[in-house]
Length: 280
Image 1 (tube, rainbow, N blue to C red):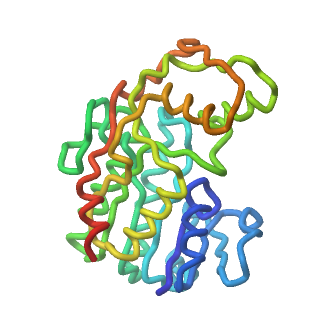
Image 2 (image 1 turned 90 degrees about the vertical axis):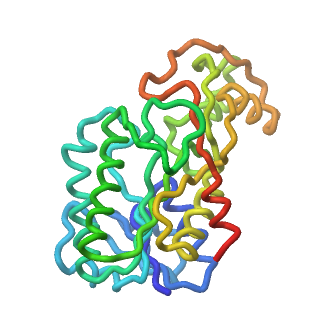
């Protein structure tokens, strides 16, 4: 089986390619800058490609893969930027539509819990989406466009809706890297929000494992929450990191406001994911 991965040099992409490199598949890692993947083994084929400039021969350049795991998305972590639907949404759909029309049989695209918007509690895939920021809106619109496309050009589609994650290679602006940097600087205090927000966190290597399993074993699953299914407060999570690493640092809670583009309590319902993992 031939698997292509866009966004292969990104946070999630590096972990997905690492998972696939251990499997008996032919792996094509797609990135805008091949030097970012120079640490990959020779068995992995690297294709340098900017989806904004993809042409009609793009499917051929990718080696006509059996499955595409599509992780690429520009503009993060600025979730409020109009770029997401002014520019990125059009680029993304044009790129994926071109591949499908050229013969791509199976596609997994990563979505986001932000598609649920400001709704609170456990989110299940059959609930209506109500995105409340440009990023969530653009992702939700792309999902709908691909679903319409399937009615005209049949292909297998899995929409892996990701929630929060952490792990190696995470952007420096994320919570865990900021905490780690504070510890390494010798800071005695770490400023953060109140920490009472309930979130759904998974280690990124587990997210990657689940994405790969969905792509290979459940290529037409529709929308699937890729999540822990268990809420945890941000404060408790940070306290766990401090305890696990024996770091000596105190939390200054309430120093920053909670993000206004996220509800105070949201997590994923994992029932559909669990059912898929026990079948096929």
